[in-house]
Image 1: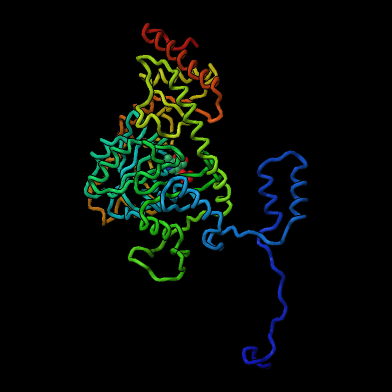
Image 2: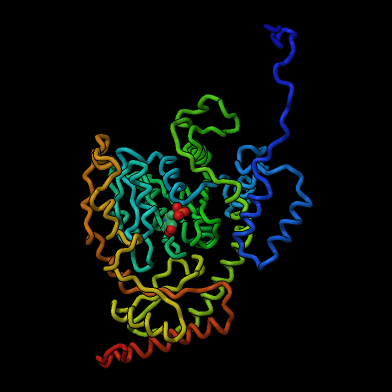
Length: 451
Ligand SMILES: Cc1ncc(COP(=O)(O)O)c(C=O)c1O
């Protein structure tokens, strides 16, 4: 036996392997391919990359960078400035942001959370995942949660209200905040569909206690998948950070004991990757311009509308607010809405209606996961949770008749930030033409469309 190295003997291993880059040009080229460039361009890019390759690759894990240096942190800091809030946490989706938000507020076993009957299922699903009871409230003719119904549904077990700025339309935040403060409830704004929108001069997502944004493919800005959380309160931010990072692994002092009770608990991994953050960072820079143009085009179209007694604009909680990638019209009945959609399509104007008899995860009627209290395990938590002392809501497909009525009569016309003034004017003229003609036929009791 030789002498131990620690005691002055020879080292067993003297060879040192060269630095082994985790990510090479191949990975970068796979990303380049996603952009679908013209033939030959990829090869040119590859040649340039090979020429300037330093052998060093980036970390795609945010916490391997010095504080403030990662793409994800840079994105969070840009969001802080853009939304004018002190704390921002980037996540891997809005669904995870909503769950982390609920956990941060303490909504969980034994509590109820109010959610609108019209939203993507994620807003309601997050409540069940956080182990609280979802209480479904009506929307009103603004297409967003009805404050009166929210107040009616508050019980001694209510912990939070999730309001959703659907389709870029701002909720009645003054009324909601008044109710929340009166009953000492948290307000979580689901801004998945309304990034960059405003309400009475404030950015949506910064009025309640926590704002949750989505960066999935369909949203105003996107990074394929991703989410943003905005906070005014440091403790809510700290708790959300803990939950989003498994064991609060990456607090400033990683292995430090709990600084305050409620900081350390078992969490999930909802961290944003540097790949998502790089795209999200570039997208955020475009957001103001997109929303400014959407608002300008929306205003131009609305200012030229001449509607009739059979159709009106949705109730507007802030005529200068929202983010306006759609314009909503409310028709007298479902048949008129559907006839208008078809007629507008023939005029060259894209619009959509809601057939509430067709399955759709945006309509509470089809959330049988909740209506039938389905759960992943047979014990049936949270509905069977012994900590819950309230009376479970009586869920049914018809429990929110106002929501079904408003949805079935509404029609949404898409607006692009790229529209020219002429395109806006043509849309307004098309709407006026269809509204006038269908209304005339309705007055005269004639068929709405001769097809
Ligand atoms: C209103 C609303 N909330 C939450 C979500 C969930 O977002 P994500 O796909 O980022 O989890 C969506 C996505 O469609 C949404 O529209």
